[in-house]
Length: 226
Image 1 (cartoon, rainbow, N blue to C red):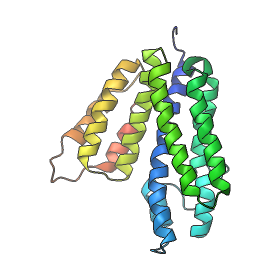
Image 2 (image 1 turned 90 degrees about the horizontal axis):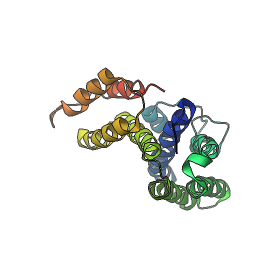
Image 3 (image 1 turned 180 degrees about the vertical axis):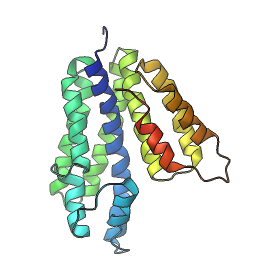
């Protein structure tokens, strides 16, 4: 592969981010779904607040019907998967048909989940296909730069979500180290001051100190200049 254009870079970056968003939000949604099925409560409002998405749902039945599968809901799992697919289909020449096929299989699985009596089993297939997509990308994409852009997007999205979830800084540190390496190798333009701030926010905390999660999210969102 030759020089990667700015448009291709942008699409590869967001392919990484959207595929990670689908994967992690399915895992979160599965826990929320189980609790609602067990009648622990209508905790979907807490779920929306945690991810900072508008609570536009009337009740837990409406939430389960729309958040997972409504492509007109811009924050739904389905909508984010479609965004990943829209980028992947344009990048067919860069990532290869074999790699693309696993995003297509994820679309097929989520459509099955939408009409299934056991939707979580089908959503597990979506997760599995996202994992397969990342794995096959390592094997089938010849360009190291292309792989690094996708993986940088994936890691950046994961830090963003983990900070919103207020996970332990140990997890954030691990993802930060993985992300920084990929970001540098990707050749993407990024704000070095922003990266330094992010490292200070995550690595500068002792075990007993609470991280400034809001500032971490802000730094992550301002990091890459695409």
